[in-house]
Image (cartoon, rainbow, N blue to C red; front, side, top):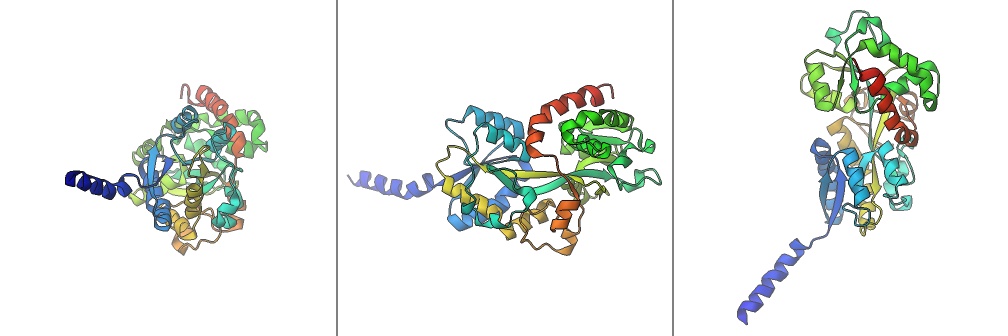
Amino acid sequence: MKRLLLSATALSLLAPAAFAETLVVSSWGGSFRDLIDQTIAEKFTEETGVEVEFITGGTIDRLNQARLSRDTPESDVTFTTSHIGWLYANDGLFEELDMSQIPNAENLVEQAAISPYHIGAWAYVYTIGYLPDLVPEGVTFDSWNDLWSPELEGMLAAPDFDPSHIIAAAAELEGVDIENWQEASNKLLELKPNFRAFYTNDANSQQLLSSGETPVQVILSMNAYHMQSQGLDVQLAIPEEGAVLGVDTMGITAGTDKAELAYQFINAALDPEVQAEIAEIKKGSPVVSNVELPAELADLPGIFTTPEQWDSQTLIIPHELRAEKTAEWRQWFSENMIAGN
């Protein structure tokens, strides 16, 4: 009898740890998982006492898994890109957000209010990055049109997984809406001689720059700043037409039984101090307007802290249209720009 009582006591002591409530977040792995853990999750756990667990994977892999597990969702909050978030929403995989439960969203910038189902967590740009010492003399990057300079033949790289940035730039230069992007296809084909390579991920982008093989790139601003921290002299230009805006977003997984906690997590993400931490770590733009950044950070190209910057320095591809057109754009780009290059 004494042994049974001891076992029961031991079990009762273990129970709180074994069955503690957790919030499950779906995100990318690596540095982005760490970013969320060290900033948003830390704030959330401090406020609620609830621990955060992660399931990680690629953007499309996680979408496909969410489709498969829709009846028994594996996560409570999902991070994804703005346009892929529309695929979640259109498939009924996100709850419609009750913004009254996210007080910090009162300061959300217009450009991060993506849909009724998902909102921004941080922002960045794809723009022109270059190595000053390897760019031909006299070539500048005041406009996207400068990428078409004959002096850059065989010097350019861009991502093979998402051609939307250069397609948006070409459409802007041709004065056509991106819905009618085919009218800019000849402009795109004129750029083909300048391409040397197409990178498959951020690490491949860094390798091509470090080697000098492609001293000019259409590049993710966050990755460029990471390369700078590694000692590479890559510089960013914001063309007069604007850099192509990217927003990584948060949504509440449809069917979660922890919606209240999910709202608290998203509210923690929009806390101005958390947003400042994210900007400091990843060199991305805060998505709320009440953040104070040090001047040396706020002055970096691609970090926006004023309405004028958000309006004049960004080139925005409509997020739902981008979700609809991505496969079409990738196919055209693969067949016409990458093939034979």
